[in-house]
Amino acid sequence: MEVLKTAPKRVMAVTPHPDDCEGGCGGALAKWVKESGTVASVVMCTNGNKGTKDREMSPERLAATRQVEQRNASGLVGITDVVFLGHPDGGLEDTELFRSQVTREIRRFKPDLLLCIDPYRSTTHTHRDHRKSGQVALDAAFTYAWSYQHFPEQITEEGLEPHRVEQALLWGSEDPDVFVDISRYLDVKVDSLGAHASQMSSTREERLERVKRHSGGHKELTGLDYAEGFRRITFNLGSLEWQLLHT
Ligand SMILES: [Zn+2]
Image (tube, rainbow, N blue to C red; front, top):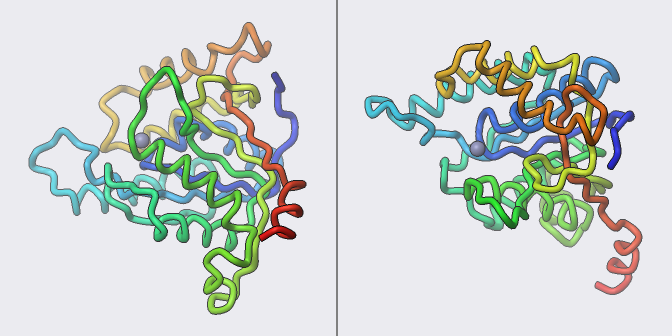
């Protein structure tokens, strides 16, 4: 177990639906941006156009609303770079198009840390889009983004360069081993969740209580009043040299 004391210079969160990122890592992102000058990017994989119980709401209107809400939420966290890939809600697939899009964003933004949802839960189920987005984000970071051989047109025609991400932190993990103290950022987290107004039926007070309950659950292990927990994956860059020589 580690309480993370350092901050990335550039961090990219690949997230399936509007509001997932704020719930999973909004506190850590806000902390890094405000305390360490981290530059943060969010890649929104779907347009969230199924996220309503309102039968009068059209998918098109909901998608437009959720894009505005995501921009507002990202603004509160301090995220300056928001990308909408626009895949249909519930329709995320591990396709060449999706892999190329995430690879392009990694090559363009050049993060040193990737954040995404843990796609490898074994005892609990999660939304299909969550699994797909986590898997493709990890695959794009290792190995697509670093290799000239993958999506070479991004390099020859778009002027991008291969980029190596060294680490990923996965939120929503059953086995978090890295924790970030978000005690001073509960308000930012709660307000950024509240910015997704179309998804919220709770009051601000109820949201604050929920965030406190969730982020306070690691106190015994970490000594932190409120923390976001992640599972760390360190990409084995050493083996890349071997792979490059043998492919
Ligand atoms: Zn979601």
